[in-house]
Length: 93
Length: 472
Image (cartoon, rainbow over all chains, first blue to last red):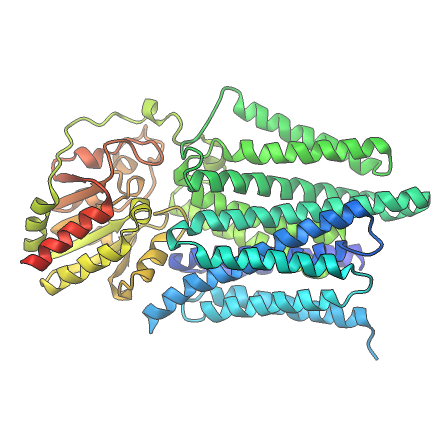
């Protein structure tokens, strides 16, 4: 992909991120932080791509470690967030 | 027919849209749970289509996914609600380390292919790629050790106090300068053998910087640090995305980075401080010296005597803090609230925006204990009528009720908005012992004329009050 295009996407995403969080009640700060923390585990995609048959032993193992760590981040992050929000749900009902 | 890479990229766009809606819905109470689910679906989609890419070593990939998934699943299921802040910090650190490793793996991949064909490396490792590799390693490294250190502080494995030493700022600045210099050196000629040593140096310095950057920050400021590190882990993923030219990493990482930064700023505003101030002030390390020593006596009473006062009270405000979380007292507190209501007393929970160790920490705990939503009140709604309140019960909160924030210009927390518990007709402070709070500050509230201290484990104290109510 073109470099400039990526930078373009980067800048737009930054503005979008700022806009999305503008007004959030403080009680939701924790789930929001934990939920976005799970999204940052998107690096798992990069980790998977790093474990390529063309990659040598060392970089494949580095990629493997990255997959494990990122998956912990993703799975754990989403589940913890879900647990927190489940408690809010009970109350709203 | 579309080829595989078009399908992959289209799916990445869909995943990005799901993330965006997910974050948006997470910001509203009634859609939050669906929002989280939506963003999880986006993640699943992104992972599945990535598995379709050509040339993956499936045993390693599937093994890694299964292993990480199992560990994440078990930890998330097992954790106590009170252990949530440190767990988020820990997960965050893993994410940062993963991005670091992706950057490193890409470097080695390019380096190894160089052994076969010189021109490949020069082509593959352009200065730009080299720069983003440095960024992924730098940000990922800081996120990793910073989060692990924060995890240690939050879980009590390392002291909560801020640690400072002479020349610390200069030392950190030197570390940062070293990284920048090494980064420029590496980016300008990434293909040499020297460059490898330089990159390893950057890696080590970044890991050190993460530790030394979090070290001088006091326990009371941890919510801000966690939020900032969360933002960093997003940026690290974003940098990793530039390294491997992957748009979904760039978009998702940047979204997290930007939204995390805004959240951090919102939290700093709640404490009436700037982000820079939080990061470099060494808050809490020297407070005994520059905060005014409180004069006056601590006046302890027993839970039994406290009960008699509570029984006569017509309005009670409960101000929870980290101590309630530590003592796991939220269920007992809820029960006390219910009994007080039955006794014709108006009960409200006043929640300071930065009470606890994460923003919204207290809301999560009280929600777990089923405290009715209508009883939760924000600081700004409570303060105007607090003088009419018969009893304010402070449960394990300290800085957020410290009057020094309003009247002592030498106090490090001067200017921070607080819940004005000292203005209530009577104030009970539940506290484990006579020491200073997590941040190390003296609290004039404890020695104020209308304050009564109830020492002991918060859960035991509240439970014994509940028992008294039931007996009568």
